[in-house]
Length: 190
Image (cartoon, helix red, strand yellow):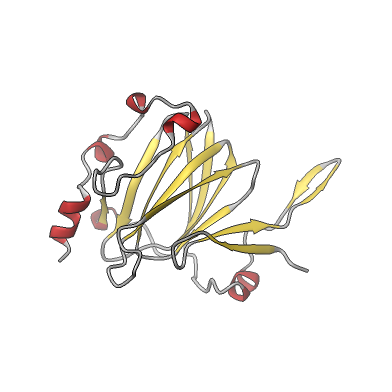
């Protein structure tokens, strides 16, 4: 029985995973992760840490990555909705410096698989949004870095207008207000 569908979305190695959902009068059931089935999809990472965040609407987290201990991630939303963005930081890849964004929600139940070598961030589109994600390496605060969410070179379309969000009233951590520009990231990582 097929439990997951892997959907290519434009950057090599990044996929949407659509789970097979069993719905009935009681509600729903689905497997959100199965190591054997993910291996069959070509996702062979070993996940070592689970993370859970809760945010109100208009929170923007990111764009985060770890320099020496990069993390692959499997992202899903269990409550609410996000616009999830990844930026390819793999210098050897033809899509280096390219970004893509997808909507993940409790309604669509899609998961986003992100291999090592990406900056990651998301914008919450509803209050009380809860995001779960698996990571392939342990979080290391001394190794964490980031790129500013509104970098002019990357020119990420956060779809504020489409989602009815005032981009001037975003809620950001102090750290995320001071992240590097993509140009500065390139200078520091020659």
